[in-house]
Amino acid sequence: MNQHSLKKSQEFSQLKILLPILIPIILFSLLPLGRGIYLGFTDYTLGSSIKFNGIENYFQLFKDHYFWKSFRVGIVWTIAVSLGQLILGMGLALLLNSRIKFFSIYSVLIIIPWAMPPIIRGIVWRQIYDPDSGILNSVLMQMNIIVNPINWLSSFEHVIPAVIVAGIWGGVPQTTIFLLAGLKNISTGVYDAAKMDGAGIWTEFTRITVPLLKPTLAAVLSLNFLWNFNSFGLVWVLTQGGPGGLTRLPMLAAYEEAFRYGYVGYAAAIGNVMIIILSVVLYFYLRIQFKEQVKT
Image 1 (cartoon, rainbow, N blue to C red):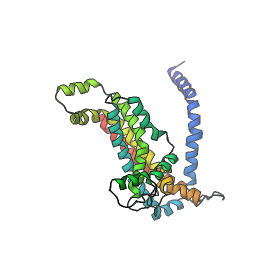
Image 2 (tube, helix red, strand yellow):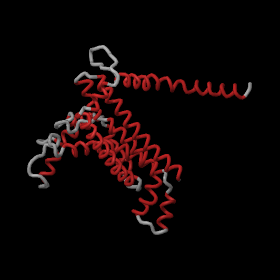
Image 3 (cartoon, one colour):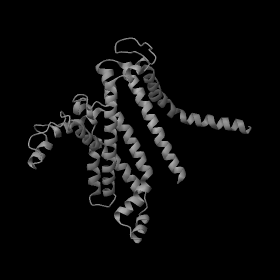
Image 4 (cartoon, rainbow, N blue to C red):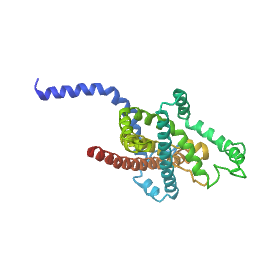
């Protein structure tokens, strides 16, 4: 058997090994994705036949004021929640990595919000924010911070911070776990050497922890960004996109177009635009990360 035939045989053997993995990916990922992309170029509505209409949906989307308003809301929500999750997750990871007592108990308590489905988290926070019986208003009034109860989820002034806090709370656990795993991979000898040179806590954090944790931080931030931008279940339970569409996230807009109004083709077009935008952002992000790795 010549070298070319041997190479072909090896490639065929590798394909047979990968086939059980590739088939589910094709059936349950690529085919639905392709179907969704195709529907974005049709005028399909629930209960009607599918008719190809080219890029008409995208012309309509370009002029859709309500969609671009929801897109701006989505960007604010995504950036604020992702950064909040990263900051709080880093603080908790550093705390858990400092050999505190009852480590296992704290770890379980931190994971609880992660274990809750978004719908349950939304119900919990609706009770916290309730203007009449919510614990938040009760505590703030007892501390004389506010005089009258605040309707957190119906007020134009307070609803955005309210849903952002709820979003951060739900995503901190997984961020903490990922960052804690990264901290565990940093050798304690590096910190011991820094202490011998007179480095303080802040110097250790900025000169050792952050640089060595940079790949993990980048991965966590990018995953959180993608997840938060595509999620809407929590916000749907809290506000249903109100008041006045102020918390209508892009994916919530797509959901409403498809299942409230029946415009499946238009909703699919929204999804296609979101895929393109997220792909471009992720491309430039990964490109920057690759250049930094090459430099180091």
